Length: 290
Ligand SMILES: Nc1nc2c(c(=O)[nH]1)N[C@@H](CN(C=O)c1ccc(C(=O)N[C@@H](CCC(=O)O)C(=O)O)cc1)CN2
Image (cartoon, rainbow, N blue to C red; front, side, top):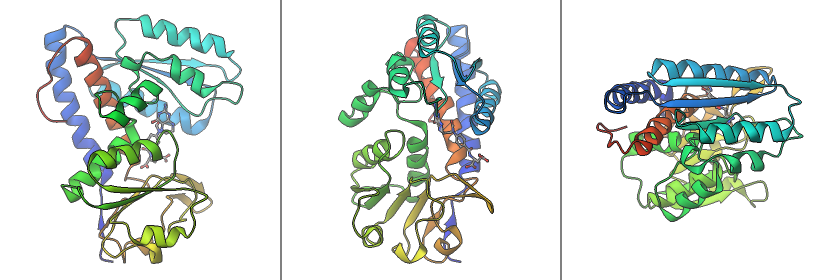
């Protein structure tokens, strides 16, 4: 084994602590805590666990957390009405509707209904556009968490070859935008990419976000590459990522584990985004790096 294991759990704990310190200062100045509303539709067990974790982390950071649970068969209009009410609520700085949603609900209609300035998930097309043109907005939590881990590991990323595997709106596309903004040379690979192994072979940075267990093989990697594994695949052998982790340890320079890599960053960045939303809405200049 030669690769360093990137400890996302420890980095996320540090970020949550920095957020909590800035929340204290925010509350002193604003006379209130930042408020996050999390909406869960249905009873998907993994989503229920993530929503519970978000609630606990929100409170531990000193923020106000409100959870709305709706039944799986809730009409889409009722969900949109709830989003409208949260948009109008001055105590709410961040709104998040947990994904995936039941099949009868149009996810795009729901995420587009959220006020872009309370969209702490960064999924609204306005925030996707802001990211694409370099304006301040909200960046989706998972790719921003990946970028934080990469910068902590490598420092300046400029000039590096990055390959993002996966082109989802939630991870692949914003990840590519973030890496372009860091002056990387970025390739987005996907299911139609020809000869994926040779595309990955040239990458100094590999971000795997395909949702296929251990698809990225050690033999594809450039020796010394930094590998960020976004996959969370439940298999009979347990939770595994999109990368052959054991094999990657012998070739990569650094690699994130699953669990304990990217996953914990998602919730820590959500807290960061919520605090930043609250500061913007109250015209408070936050002090201390996040
Ligand atoms: N509205 C949103 N929905 C979803 C998002 C999101 O960012 N916004 N992301 C994922 C789920 N997710 C948070 O919502 C999330 C996923 C994974 C983890 C995490 O800490 N994973 C652990 C493993 C935990 C496990 O056993 O499942 C790890 O990787 O160490 C946190 C949050 C989809 N929906």
